Every structure is written in structure tokens, then in C-alpha cells.
Image (cartoon, rainbow, N blue to C red; front, side, top):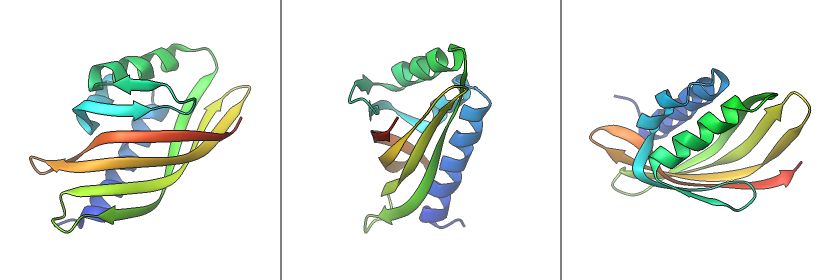
Length: 125
């Protein structure tokens, strides 16, 4: 059985690969239906459908390459059903780069880790 911290890190790596491949629809299972996402400029996106639509829109932008999230730490609750992931992120376009810090809240639902909330802070770019 995979330790919860390893499972969260593995799920993050999978999302990075799907974003690099511009596979918006395949990201949906990684998000809780009622996910809350605060993007780098402070805007709020509510719900998995809206998050997937935002990804699809960015994937269609000329010059967009990928977002990379690098996990620095994963902290678990006592029951092992919620986790806080902290790390650094970068957004890459053909002509620019943005980066900063992020925090993601994961919860275990039906044996699988899903993101219930994320907050990204743009510090560069």
C-alpha cells in the first residue's frame, strides 16, 4: 500500500504530465466537484468544470507550454484523509515565465486523493 504522502506526490506528478500534454479533460478526476482554486493573480475559480474549462482555455493560447508544480512538503491529518501540499510552481510560455508558491488541500475520497482547494501566489513574472 502506498503511503498517503507518496500518493499525493504521485498524483501531483500525473497532473504535471497531463498539463504538459495539454490534456484538460483528463485532469477532471484529480479535482473534487466543488474544488476552489485561487489563481496567481487572485481570481477565484469554483467547481471542477470551471477549472477544466480554464485549463482548456490556457492550452489554446498561442505560446502556452505548461505549468509545473514541485512539491516541497506534504502534511497529513491524524486520520490520513486530508493532506496539505506546499511547493513552488512555474508557468511557461514561449515568451515568458511566471512562478511562485502554492498550497493544495487534498482529501481521500473512495480510496483516491483529489484536490479540494488550491491557492497559487505569483511572486515572479
